[in-house]
Length: 327
Image (cartoon, rainbow, N blue to C red):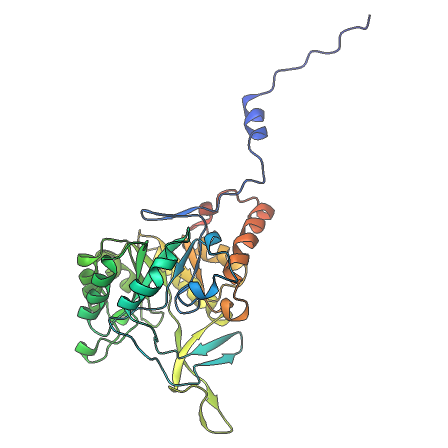
């Protein structure tokens, strides 16, 4: 008969809790107002078509959401070719907002998009306030949309061509008009070319925006020095890609200090660490754009990459990164 060994102490409640929480379980879910997303990664407007064009390459159900090409009241042919030119660490584009129009989108695209289990966000634009309202009226009669993204980087033809997004009063007016007719959440996509992003962000929030998207592309010009002409058919265009990320991260941080609504960061996202930077600066989610021109599967691969990054960094709740920048 062997002597009894030393008595074992009962496990503590804390130890039990640790054992029940596998370190591998990562929660990538985020909440943008009333909208819940499975992860913070959305495909940005204008870089992912209407979403359907990528369905044979990408598992759309893995994305947090898809933002459609900009939709206008009537179809638009867009800018003359060439429309894209590569630059150092990015590209300049002048697509000219080519699209099939809101009515054709509702008839031809939206029924197919309903088959996917991801948030579909319609990007909306116009050249006067009534055009914005008209597009939303058309979309309100259809099912399948999770939110609207209001592109306010367009010139207001009724006010001498000034961009809605560069003047707080213009911003407030168009957002308020859209808010009156929109039943879905209203996201407002801001221009980066402003004196104070905080003033524009606050004007959009006060007028009824549910979230902000920061930011659109930066005005740019690419010249062919041999031919002495623009490298784009419409002379100027919009700069996007990795080159703009540090500037836009700063804009997100500045806006997050003056508004209480969620912010989606957009600009130069290529890696999981880029996503983390935007969230630390104050973003709740991000939109991936130019990376799709390098790899059409960029958004989907970033979902897997972000989960791995979180495991390595021991970040169990992705939402815990929001605004956690150490000043």
